[in-house]
Length: 439
Image (tube, rainbow, N blue to C red; front, side, top):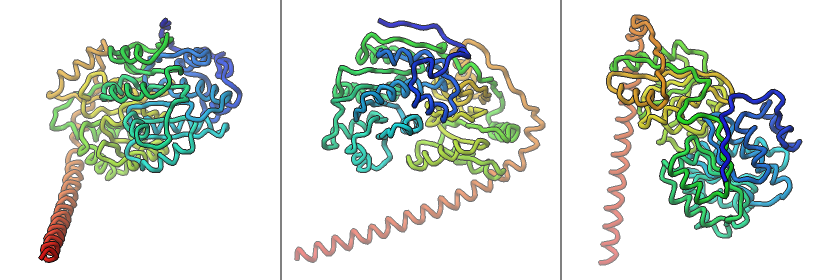
Protein backbone atom coordinates (compact mmCIF):
# COMPACT_ATOMS: atom_id res chain seq x y z
CA UNK A 1 0.00 0.00 0.00
CA UNK A 2 1.31 3.44 -0.93
CA UNK A 3 0.98 6.42 1.36
CA UNK A 4 1.31 9.76 -0.42
CA UNK A 5 2.33 12.78 1.63
CA UNK A 6 1.68 16.46 0.97
CA UNK A 7 4.48 18.73 -0.15
CA UNK A 8 6.31 20.30 2.75
CA UNK A 9 7.72 23.79 2.49
CA UNK A 10 9.65 24.03 5.74
CA UNK A 11 11.02 22.01 8.60
CA UNK A 12 9.83 22.85 12.08
CA UNK A 13 12.39 24.50 14.34
CA UNK A 14 11.94 21.78 16.96
CA UNK A 15 12.75 18.90 14.59
CA UNK A 16 16.27 17.54 14.97
CA UNK A 17 18.01 14.38 13.79
CA UNK A 18 17.87 13.16 17.38
CA UNK A 19 14.10 13.67 17.56
CA UNK A 20 13.73 11.59 14.36
CA UNK A 21 15.34 8.64 16.15
CA UNK A 22 18.86 8.97 14.77
CA UNK A 23 21.50 7.48 17.05
CA UNK A 24 24.07 9.69 18.83
CA UNK A 25 27.08 8.71 16.71
CA UNK A 26 25.26 9.64 13.50
CA UNK A 27 23.89 12.87 15.01
CA UNK A 28 27.51 13.81 15.75
CA UNK A 29 28.41 12.99 12.14
CA UNK A 30 25.61 15.30 10.94
CA UNK A 31 27.02 18.07 13.12
CA UNK A 32 30.48 17.58 11.58
CA UNK A 33 28.87 17.97 8.16
CA UNK A 34 27.15 21.15 9.42
CA UNK A 35 23.70 19.64 8.89
CA UNK A 36 22.04 21.73 11.57
CA UNK A 37 18.57 20.23 11.06
CA UNK A 38 16.90 17.72 8.71
CA UNK A 39 15.73 18.87 5.30
CA UNK A 40 12.08 18.17 4.40
CA UNK A 41 12.92 14.91 2.57
CA UNK A 42 15.08 13.77 5.50
CA UNK A 43 12.40 14.73 8.02
CA UNK A 44 9.80 12.61 6.24
CA UNK A 45 11.98 9.73 5.06
CA UNK A 46 14.15 8.85 8.06
CA UNK A 47 11.38 7.79 10.50
CA UNK A 48 9.66 5.71 7.80
CA UNK A 49 12.96 4.07 6.82
CA UNK A 50 13.82 3.31 10.45
CA UNK A 51 10.45 1.57 10.76
CA UNK A 52 11.53 -0.89 8.05
CA UNK A 53 9.40 0.23 5.08
CA UNK A 54 10.28 0.39 1.40
CA UNK A 55 10.29 4.01 0.21
CA UNK A 56 9.69 5.98 -2.98
CA UNK A 57 11.11 9.46 -2.52
CA UNK A 58 10.14 12.26 -4.91
CA UNK A 59 11.96 15.48 -4.12
CA UNK A 60 13.36 18.51 -5.86
CA UNK A 61 17.06 18.46 -6.61
CA UNK A 62 19.31 19.64 -3.79
CA UNK A 63 16.90 18.41 -1.14
CA UNK A 64 19.29 16.20 0.83
CA UNK A 65 18.21 12.86 -0.63
CA UNK A 66 21.55 11.14 0.02
CA UNK A 67 21.33 11.80 3.74
CA UNK A 68 17.72 10.61 3.71
CA UNK A 69 18.74 7.09 2.72
CA UNK A 70 22.31 6.96 4.07
CA UNK A 71 21.43 7.68 7.69
CA UNK A 72 18.85 4.83 8.10
CA UNK A 73 21.15 2.35 6.34
CA UNK A 74 24.10 3.22 8.56
CA UNK A 75 21.95 3.09 11.70
CA UNK A 76 20.83 -0.44 10.83
CA UNK A 77 24.43 -1.39 9.96
CA UNK A 78 25.55 -0.31 13.44
CA UNK A 79 23.29 -2.99 14.91
CA UNK A 80 24.06 -5.79 12.44
CA UNK A 81 27.70 -5.21 11.40
CA UNK A 82 27.31 -7.13 8.13
CA UNK A 83 29.53 -6.93 5.04
CA UNK A 84 28.07 -6.20 1.58
CA UNK A 85 25.13 -4.81 3.52
CA UNK A 86 23.80 -2.20 1.08
CA UNK A 87 24.02 -1.36 -2.62
CA UNK A 88 23.41 2.12 -4.04
CA UNK A 89 22.96 2.38 -7.81
CA UNK A 90 23.46 5.74 -9.52
CA UNK A 91 23.25 6.74 -13.20
CA UNK A 92 26.59 8.56 -13.48
CA UNK A 93 30.12 8.19 -12.18
CA UNK A 94 30.10 11.68 -10.72
CA UNK A 95 26.94 11.09 -8.72
CA UNK A 96 28.23 7.72 -7.49
CA UNK A 97 31.47 9.35 -6.37
CA UNK A 98 29.55 12.09 -4.58
CA UNK A 99 27.32 9.56 -2.79
CA UNK A 100 30.42 7.68 -1.64
CA UNK A 101 31.82 10.92 -0.20
CA UNK A 102 28.63 11.47 1.84
CA UNK A 103 28.68 7.90 3.18
CA UNK A 104 32.37 8.27 4.00
CA UNK A 105 31.76 11.50 5.93
CA UNK A 106 28.83 10.04 7.87
CA UNK A 107 30.67 6.78 8.59
CA UNK A 108 34.02 8.07 9.81
CA UNK A 109 33.19 7.38 13.43
CA UNK A 110 32.09 3.79 12.84
CA UNK A 111 35.00 2.40 10.74
CA UNK A 112 32.86 2.17 7.63
CA UNK A 113 34.27 0.37 4.59
CA UNK A 114 33.05 1.51 1.18
CA UNK A 115 33.37 0.12 -2.32
CA UNK A 116 33.01 2.41 -5.35
CA UNK A 117 32.39 0.62 -8.66
CA UNK A 118 32.40 2.99 -11.63
CA UNK A 119 33.76 2.95 -15.16
CA UNK A 120 36.93 4.79 -16.12
CA UNK A 121 38.72 3.47 -13.01
CA UNK A 122 41.08 0.50 -12.72
CA UNK A 123 38.97 -2.65 -12.54
CA UNK A 124 41.61 -4.77 -10.78
CA UNK A 125 41.86 -2.26 -7.93
CA UNK A 126 38.08 -2.45 -7.57
CA UNK A 127 38.25 -6.27 -7.45
CA UNK A 128 40.78 -6.08 -4.61
CA UNK A 129 38.46 -3.74 -2.76
CA UNK A 130 35.59 -6.19 -3.22
CA UNK A 131 37.76 -8.97 -1.79
CA UNK A 132 37.86 -7.00 1.49
CA UNK A 133 34.04 -7.20 1.56
CA UNK A 134 33.05 -3.55 2.15
CA UNK A 135 29.89 -2.69 4.07
CA UNK A 136 28.40 -0.40 1.41
CA UNK A 137 28.73 -0.54 -2.38
CA UNK A 138 28.06 2.49 -4.56
CA UNK A 139 28.02 1.66 -8.26
CA UNK A 140 26.90 2.47 -11.75
CA UNK A 141 24.84 -0.41 -13.22
CA UNK A 142 27.24 -1.38 -16.02
CA UNK A 143 30.38 -1.67 -13.91
CA UNK A 144 28.54 -3.53 -11.13
CA UNK A 145 27.33 -6.14 -13.64
CA UNK A 146 30.87 -6.61 -14.94
CA UNK A 147 32.02 -7.48 -11.41
CA UNK A 148 29.02 -9.69 -10.66
CA UNK A 149 29.79 -11.69 -13.80
CA UNK A 150 33.57 -11.64 -13.78
CA UNK A 151 35.00 -11.12 -10.28
CA UNK A 152 35.65 -14.45 -8.59
CA UNK A 153 33.90 -14.90 -5.27
CA UNK A 154 31.87 -11.70 -5.50
CA UNK A 155 28.11 -11.89 -5.02
CA UNK A 156 25.35 -10.00 -3.24
CA UNK A 157 23.39 -12.91 -1.77
CA UNK A 158 23.41 -11.37 1.73
CA UNK A 159 22.42 -7.86 0.62
CA UNK A 160 19.95 -6.13 2.95
CA UNK A 161 19.38 -2.76 1.20
CA UNK A 162 19.03 -1.60 -2.39
CA UNK A 163 18.92 2.10 -3.26
CA UNK A 164 18.04 3.28 -6.77
CA UNK A 165 19.06 6.95 -6.86
CA UNK A 166 17.82 9.14 -9.72
CA UNK A 167 15.89 6.15 -11.03
CA UNK A 168 14.22 8.22 -13.76
CA UNK A 169 17.57 9.18 -15.21
CA UNK A 170 18.92 5.62 -15.05
CA UNK A 171 15.96 4.51 -17.14
CA UNK A 172 16.36 7.46 -19.52
CA UNK A 173 19.97 6.33 -20.03
CA UNK A 174 18.71 2.85 -21.02
CA UNK A 175 19.97 1.07 -17.90
CA UNK A 176 16.64 -0.76 -17.58
CA UNK A 177 18.03 -4.08 -18.81
CA UNK A 178 21.08 -3.89 -16.52
CA UNK A 179 18.87 -3.05 -13.52
CA UNK A 180 16.67 -6.04 -14.34
CA UNK A 181 19.70 -8.33 -14.39
CA UNK A 182 20.97 -6.93 -11.09
CA UNK A 183 17.54 -7.47 -9.49
CA UNK A 184 17.70 -11.13 -10.52
CA UNK A 185 21.06 -11.51 -8.74
CA UNK A 186 20.18 -10.03 -5.33
CA UNK A 187 17.88 -11.35 -2.56
CA UNK A 188 14.15 -10.65 -2.82
CA UNK A 189 14.03 -10.20 0.95
CA UNK A 190 15.55 -6.76 1.32
CA UNK A 191 14.59 -3.14 1.87
CA UNK A 192 14.41 -0.98 -1.27
CA UNK A 193 14.56 2.80 -1.55
CA UNK A 194 13.81 4.42 -4.90
CA UNK A 195 14.51 8.12 -5.36
CA UNK A 196 13.49 10.05 -8.45
CA UNK A 197 12.88 13.61 -9.57
CA UNK A 198 9.78 12.49 -11.50
CA UNK A 199 7.34 9.59 -11.35
CA UNK A 200 7.28 8.45 -14.97
CA UNK A 201 5.56 5.36 -16.37
CA UNK A 202 8.88 3.51 -16.56
CA UNK A 203 9.73 4.42 -12.96
CA UNK A 204 6.31 3.14 -11.94
CA UNK A 205 7.00 -0.16 -13.71
CA UNK A 206 10.34 -0.41 -11.91
CA UNK A 207 8.59 0.22 -8.61
CA UNK A 208 6.22 -2.67 -9.24
CA UNK A 209 9.12 -4.94 -10.18
CA UNK A 210 11.32 -4.36 -7.16
CA UNK A 211 9.32 -2.97 -4.21
CA UNK A 212 6.86 -4.25 -1.62
CA UNK A 213 4.08 -1.93 -0.44
CA UNK A 214 6.28 1.18 -0.56
CA UNK A 215 5.56 4.43 1.25
CA UNK A 216 5.52 7.32 -1.22
CA UNK A 217 7.06 10.52 0.11
CA UNK A 218 6.75 13.60 -2.05
CA UNK A 219 8.17 16.91 -0.89
CA UNK A 220 8.10 18.87 -4.14
CA UNK A 221 5.74 19.61 -6.98
CA UNK A 222 6.34 17.84 -10.27
CA UNK A 223 8.07 19.70 -13.10
CA UNK A 224 9.04 22.66 -10.94
CA UNK A 225 12.41 24.31 -10.54
CA UNK A 226 13.75 24.49 -6.99
CA UNK A 227 11.58 27.00 -5.14
CA UNK A 228 14.47 29.26 -4.13
CA UNK A 229 15.91 29.73 -7.63
CA UNK A 230 15.29 33.22 -9.04
CA UNK A 231 15.06 32.62 -12.79
CA UNK A 232 15.70 34.94 -15.73
CA UNK A 233 16.05 34.61 -19.48
CA UNK A 234 18.25 36.72 -21.76
CA UNK A 235 17.05 37.28 -25.33
CA UNK A 236 19.87 38.24 -27.69
CA UNK A 237 20.94 37.76 -31.34
CA UNK A 238 22.66 34.43 -32.03
CA UNK A 239 25.76 36.13 -33.44
CA UNK A 240 26.22 38.16 -30.22
CA UNK A 241 25.43 35.34 -27.80
CA UNK A 242 29.03 34.74 -26.73
CA UNK A 243 29.52 38.43 -26.07
CA UNK A 244 26.41 38.57 -23.88
CA UNK A 245 27.69 35.55 -21.97
CA UNK A 246 31.02 37.23 -21.34
CA UNK A 247 29.26 40.44 -20.21
CA UNK A 248 27.05 38.50 -17.79
CA UNK A 249 29.96 36.61 -16.26
CA UNK A 250 31.87 39.88 -15.82
CA UNK A 251 28.87 41.38 -14.03
CA UNK A 252 28.64 38.37 -11.71
CA UNK A 253 32.35 38.24 -10.86
CA UNK A 254 32.95 37.02 -7.31
CA UNK A 255 30.06 34.54 -7.38
CA UNK A 256 30.35 30.80 -7.81
CA UNK A 257 28.91 29.91 -11.23
CA UNK A 258 28.10 26.96 -13.45
CA UNK A 259 27.82 27.46 -17.22
CA UNK A 260 26.03 24.84 -19.31
CA UNK A 261 26.69 24.36 -23.00
CA UNK A 262 25.92 21.43 -25.29
CA UNK A 263 29.34 20.89 -26.90
CA UNK A 264 32.76 19.90 -25.59
CA UNK A 265 34.34 22.43 -27.97
CA UNK A 266 32.49 25.33 -26.35
CA UNK A 267 33.42 24.06 -22.89
CA UNK A 268 37.08 24.22 -23.92
CA UNK A 269 36.74 27.64 -25.59
CA UNK A 270 34.87 29.32 -22.73
CA UNK A 271 37.30 27.87 -20.19
CA UNK A 272 40.29 29.31 -22.05
CA UNK A 273 38.61 32.65 -22.69
CA UNK A 274 37.49 33.25 -19.12
CA UNK A 275 40.93 32.36 -17.79
CA UNK A 276 42.43 35.18 -19.87
CA UNK A 277 40.33 37.54 -17.73
CA UNK A 278 41.64 36.10 -14.45
CA UNK A 279 38.63 33.96 -13.62
CA UNK A 280 39.25 30.70 -11.80
CA UNK A 281 37.63 28.26 -14.26
CA UNK A 282 37.24 24.48 -14.29
CA UNK A 283 35.66 22.27 -16.93
CA UNK A 284 33.79 18.97 -17.18
CA UNK A 285 32.56 17.10 -20.24
CA UNK A 286 32.17 13.58 -21.57
CA UNK A 287 35.48 13.45 -23.46
CA UNK A 288 37.54 13.95 -20.30
CA UNK A 289 38.92 10.91 -18.50
CA UNK A 290 37.16 9.98 -15.29
CA UNK A 291 40.22 10.98 -13.26
CA UNK A 292 40.30 14.47 -14.81
CA UNK A 293 36.54 14.94 -14.33
CA UNK A 294 36.76 14.10 -10.63
CA UNK A 295 39.82 16.32 -10.18
CA UNK A 296 37.98 19.21 -11.85
CA UNK A 297 34.93 18.77 -9.61
CA UNK A 298 37.15 18.60 -6.52
CA UNK A 299 38.84 21.89 -7.42
CA UNK A 300 35.47 23.56 -8.07
CA UNK A 301 34.12 22.36 -4.72
CA UNK A 302 37.13 23.74 -2.90
CA UNK A 303 37.02 27.15 -4.59
CA UNK A 304 33.87 29.05 -3.60
CA UNK A 305 34.44 31.85 -6.13
CA UNK A 306 35.18 29.83 -9.24
CA UNK A 307 33.35 28.84 -12.43
CA UNK A 308 32.56 25.36 -13.73
CA UNK A 309 31.88 25.12 -17.47
CA UNK A 310 30.26 21.86 -18.49
CA UNK A 311 27.95 19.83 -20.67
CA UNK A 312 24.93 17.89 -19.43
CA UNK A 313 27.36 15.61 -17.53
CA UNK A 314 27.12 18.21 -14.75
CA UNK A 315 23.36 18.76 -14.88
CA UNK A 316 22.11 16.20 -12.36
CA UNK A 317 23.08 14.74 -9.06
CA UNK A 318 26.08 16.93 -8.30
CA UNK A 319 25.62 18.45 -4.86
CA UNK A 320 27.84 21.53 -4.56
CA UNK A 321 26.40 23.80 -1.92
CA UNK A 322 28.15 27.05 -2.81
CA UNK A 323 26.87 27.51 -6.39
CA UNK A 324 25.28 30.97 -6.60
CA UNK A 325 24.46 31.29 -10.29
CA UNK A 326 23.53 28.95 -13.14
CA UNK A 327 24.01 30.13 -16.73
CA UNK A 328 22.33 28.02 -19.41
CA UNK A 329 24.13 29.09 -22.57
CA UNK A 330 22.62 26.31 -24.72
CA UNK A 331 19.12 25.03 -24.02
CA UNK A 332 18.96 21.33 -23.10
CA UNK A 333 17.54 18.87 -25.63
CA UNK A 334 14.63 17.98 -23.33
CA UNK A 335 12.62 20.70 -21.57
CA UNK A 336 12.58 18.80 -18.26
CA UNK A 337 16.40 18.85 -18.17
CA UNK A 338 16.13 22.60 -17.61
CA UNK A 339 14.84 21.83 -14.11
CA UNK A 340 17.88 19.68 -13.37
CA UNK A 341 20.28 22.35 -14.64
CA UNK A 342 18.85 25.20 -12.57
CA UNK A 343 18.70 22.78 -9.66
CA UNK A 344 22.47 22.96 -9.30
CA UNK A 345 21.93 26.18 -7.30
CA UNK A 346 19.68 26.93 -4.31
CA UNK A 347 20.87 23.78 -2.59
CA UNK A 348 19.81 22.81 0.93
CA UNK A 349 17.60 25.83 1.58
CA UNK A 350 19.83 28.52 0.06
CA UNK A 351 18.82 30.97 -2.66
CA UNK A 352 20.31 31.08 -6.15
CA UNK A 353 19.83 32.63 -9.60
CA UNK A 354 19.67 31.23 -13.12
CA UNK A 355 20.08 32.94 -16.50
CA UNK A 356 18.96 31.17 -19.68
CA UNK A 357 20.03 32.36 -23.13
CA UNK A 358 17.37 32.55 -25.84
CA UNK A 359 17.99 33.54 -29.47
CA UNK A 360 15.91 33.72 -32.63
CA UNK A 361 16.93 30.11 -33.31
CA UNK A 362 15.52 28.42 -30.21
CA UNK A 363 12.38 30.33 -29.22
CA UNK A 364 10.17 27.27 -29.75
CA UNK A 365 12.34 25.12 -27.46
CA UNK A 366 12.36 27.86 -24.82
CA UNK A 367 8.55 28.14 -24.89
CA UNK A 368 8.40 24.38 -24.22
CA UNK A 369 10.31 25.01 -20.99
CA UNK A 370 7.87 27.73 -19.91
CA UNK A 371 4.97 25.45 -20.80
CA UNK A 372 6.43 22.71 -18.60
CA UNK A 373 6.92 25.13 -15.72
CA UNK A 374 3.47 26.66 -16.13
CA UNK A 375 4.67 30.27 -15.94
CA UNK A 376 6.75 32.82 -17.83
CA UNK A 377 10.35 33.42 -16.80
CA UNK A 378 11.12 37.16 -16.45
CA UNK A 379 13.55 38.77 -18.88
CA UNK A 380 16.95 40.13 -17.87
CA UNK A 381 17.91 42.99 -20.20
CA UNK A 382 21.49 44.25 -20.17
CA UNK A 383 22.06 47.56 -21.96
CA UNK A 384 23.17 46.73 -25.47
CA UNK A 385 25.75 49.54 -25.53
CA UNK A 386 27.38 48.14 -22.35
CA UNK A 387 27.65 44.71 -23.95
CA UNK A 388 29.02 45.95 -27.28
CA UNK A 389 31.64 48.03 -25.48
CA UNK A 390 33.44 44.75 -24.66
CA UNK A 391 33.36 43.44 -28.23
CA UNK A 392 36.80 44.45 -29.53
CA UNK A 393 38.72 43.11 -26.53
CA UNK A 394 36.68 39.92 -26.41
CA UNK A 395 37.13 39.18 -30.13
CA UNK A 396 40.88 39.76 -29.92
CA UNK A 397 41.27 37.26 -27.08
CA UNK A 398 39.00 34.79 -28.84
CA UNK A 399 41.05 35.05 -32.06
CA UNK A 400 44.32 34.62 -30.13
CA UNK A 401 42.99 31.43 -28.55
CA UNK A 402 41.81 30.11 -31.92
CA UNK A 403 45.27 30.78 -33.45
CA UNK A 404 46.94 28.99 -30.55
CA UNK A 405 44.58 26.03 -30.88
CA UNK A 406 45.16 25.80 -34.63
CA UNK A 407 48.91 25.59 -33.97
CA UNK A 408 48.40 22.86 -31.39
CA UNK A 409 46.09 20.94 -33.75
CA UNK A 410 48.65 21.24 -36.57
CA UNK A 411 51.43 19.96 -34.32
CA UNK A 412 49.27 17.02 -33.17
CA UNK A 413 48.39 16.10 -36.77
CA UNK A 414 52.09 16.13 -37.63
CA UNK A 415 52.91 13.93 -34.64
CA UNK A 416 50.16 11.46 -35.59
CA UNK A 417 51.38 11.37 -39.18
CA UNK A 418 54.95 10.65 -38.04
CA UNK A 419 53.67 8.00 -35.63
CA UNK A 420 51.64 6.23 -38.33
CA UNK A 421 54.60 6.47 -40.71
CA UNK A 422 56.90 4.86 -38.13
CA UNK A 423 54.32 2.15 -37.45
CA UNK A 424 54.05 1.50 -41.19
CA UNK A 425 57.80 1.05 -41.56
CA UNK A 426 57.76 -1.27 -38.55
CA UNK A 427 55.00 -3.45 -40.05
CA UNK A 428 56.82 -3.63 -43.45
CA UNK A 429 60.04 -4.65 -41.72
CA UNK A 430 58.30 -7.35 -39.67
CA UNK A 431 56.58 -8.73 -42.79
CA UNK A 432 59.91 -8.87 -44.67
CA UNK A 433 61.57 -10.71 -41.79
CA UNK A 434 58.73 -13.29 -41.69
CA UNK A 435 59.02 -13.75 -45.46
CA UNK A 436 62.82 -14.32 -45.21
CA UNK A 437 62.34 -16.90 -42.44
CA UNK A 438 59.85 -18.83 -44.58
CA UNK A 439 62.41 -19.00 -47.38
